[in-house]
Length: 263
Image 1 (tube, rainbow, N blue to C red):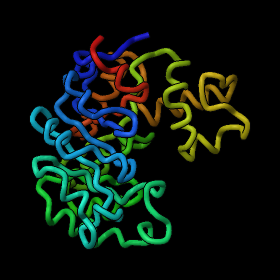
Image 2: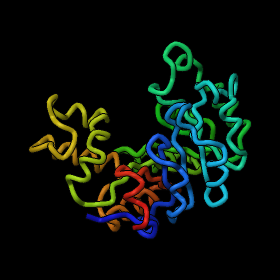
Image 3: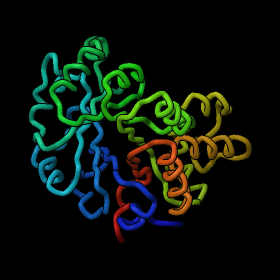
Image 4: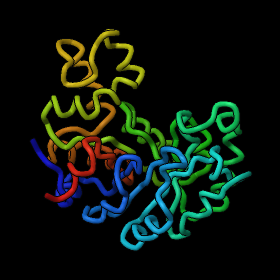
């Protein structure tokens, strides 16, 4: 089984990493040979302290995910948490995953005016496009797209239509060709995507226990919604995205940070 190290991360063509602070101390990324670090939002309780952000910003292009509808991040209301993030840290503005928003208050807030206000007050922001593609495109800033089975064709269409801003792709990554490892790492994630979910039998497991047609469906979904394979295979996928017009590929290490740290 291939283990990803700091050197092979860039060998695979990946120039950034996404971290979930509920899973790992974000400061552990220091040993990786990447230029960009994106810190995901998983609720206010998991926002790293400002000194952790400041420390990372000394070595990396760091971006904090900012859910514009959430209390503490609302540019038209309470933005106390966002304002505590050091100014040298960039932003990825997102609508916010419903799982991290209160149903009766935060989810009902209008997205477009908050995105406009947030971007007006930012320098070189990125915007997460998931669920708000038209709003995101209208801003003209760097589009941060979630990897899907149509990413390459969608990006080509944007470039053909004249979009000349930057485009980044967020990609769960498993740097091994071992099918069991792939399924255990991103099988459940792939199964949440509608085309995969609708093709699976209702009682199918979403990991390496899958067999027969369900296993092949899951593996196909993993290859469409994540970067999987050895270093050379992933590099070919990344190069294909660059050829289509993608500027940056940001990897979420689906097997955990230990799998991508030098041994």
